[in-house]
Length: 430
Image (cartoon, rainbow, N blue to C red):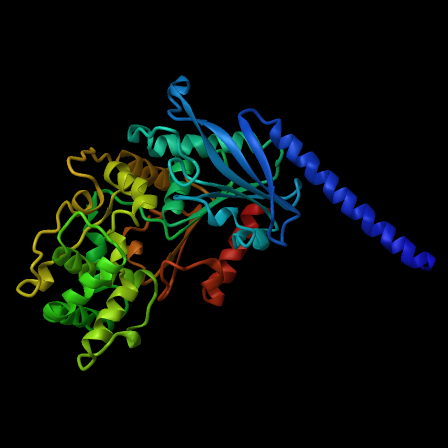
């Protein structure tokens, strides 16, 4: 081995040693943070230098910290303490965030660290005994405020909060309640509802999504599913039996709800009307496409357990979308869908009182005080029906991708919109 090879190997060894030493130093600094219960090194995306799963103690009720606590799962993927932080406020469980494959699109765009927080009462962030009174927007926002306070002394560059769908809602609630925690926010496809069963989504599906011809094709498919119900219901029942699905309503009613849900799911996930079976198609083709777009496990009790806390939040503060059976009068046995969330997703005798005050707080915040918030939506996504408005506030920006779905991201935007987004983000971060 010549002197150049020896020098190269020595340099590599020094780099490996330095990286190991820095990772251990960072882990030790995180362990020393107040309320951190554990720090576990994990495999990381190659964009980052190291990653850790961190369990942080949170009060069950931030207004009464002595009433008990739970551990919240946080995943830190480090690029450098001299870099910005992309702060991801997930709205559900966080298993995907604890995967080495996960990389939020903002991190490479902004050359930033990634700090991912699982939502309270989901996934591994659950107290020993759940009291749904404490699953509130206010407590979740206080969780995120506490995480920011913990990690900001380590990462002192700019913070950018982001989240998708319910995670995007979570961004808006956190920003409105704690406006100084982060400098920039990028909520994707985030609704802001003001009632338990919003009517705006149904109107959007029937009058705004896609083209008139596309909407007619979807409605014709739904009508055909109802006309063929006598043929398709036995197949539907066998599938549910084979999968051991259990529902809180009769199977014939679940079938009708799947037909109603079809249009919402179709537009939400950006499917093409060219896939939809035509009138001459077989019963099997109609059935297969229905369960492909809207599988009945959405209404299954066991399958719904991971998202059960979401429906609690929908009934209490977040709201949701309603169904409209009127266009199918005479062919659909189901005529009254009001209260379907309680009937289909909640145990009997469940009672929650809906309070839209936090959504109204966000609305007023966006009108008057909000700044450096980038709102991204898909033009055909039904959730865009309840998208937030800029309300004339020129310090925030709303971008709607033409024909976009719930999968709309910066990377899916047309070139002109993408350039506009990156220009404003770079302006804000610099």
